[in-house]
Amino acid sequence: MLPGFSELIEHVVPFALVLARLAGLFVFAPVLGSVTIPARAKILFATAMTVAIYPVLPPERHVAPELDLFGLIPLLVFETLIGIAIGMISSLPIVAVQMGGNLMGYQMGLTLAQTYNPDQGASGDVVGQLAFFLATAVFLAIDGLEGMFIALIGTFEHLPPGGFRVDQGFTDWVTGLVSSGFEIALRVAAPVIGMTMIVLVGMGVIMKTMPQINVLTLGFALKILVGVVAFIAAMTVIAEVANEESGLVMRDLIQWGRELRPGAG
Image (cartoon, rainbow, N blue to C red):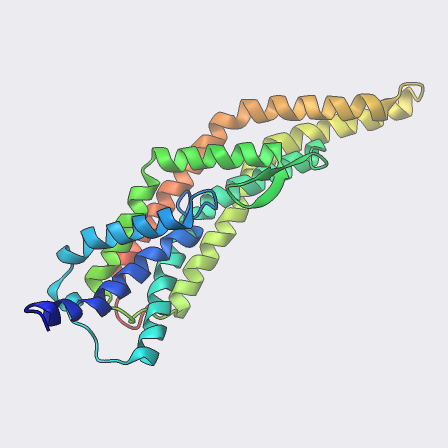
């Protein structure tokens, strides 16, 4: 065996565990988890980040745990789950804003005309996609990607490979974030829903008082027009809501990474 090769072999398992934790980000994280990014590019980026992070980790993280192949697989799974959890939590504000956009599109009657979104691998109406791209732009503008990597790197300082466990505290925290996401979706969609409801009430009054007017044909176009105007007028507020919630989630993620302990989630 070549001189120094045995020392290099000792770093293979710790390096693989660090790589697995980073690779989890590329599953559901905003932008990084996009299906439009080739898998080879994701693997190359994750490997490059691991090469940059591994040498600066605490020395005890460079020690390979005593295990065999069957013991390594569960550790790799747990490490990947950490990255997946951080990516999914980071994407919650974006999904919430998109949900609000879908509600607006439904109220405006635009769900009949759906287009394919390659970034998500699914179809959606134009308002929902506009809200999605707006929230993604806000996420990038507040350095959301940097926040995700800071939160992930912070986990290495306190949590050894394979030490992550999901406990009641972690579950309650994620449940609270999901509930907050539904609230944000309603806040985002409230202006358009309110305006379209006013239009529907007006259409009902006109239909009863002046039945000779074709309310269905006129009201459908009017509802879309009013909804689009309300959406454009509310875009600044939507961006502020996305900014506030994304910043809050990033701060919580970084704090969570700093408070992790072996056996805790």
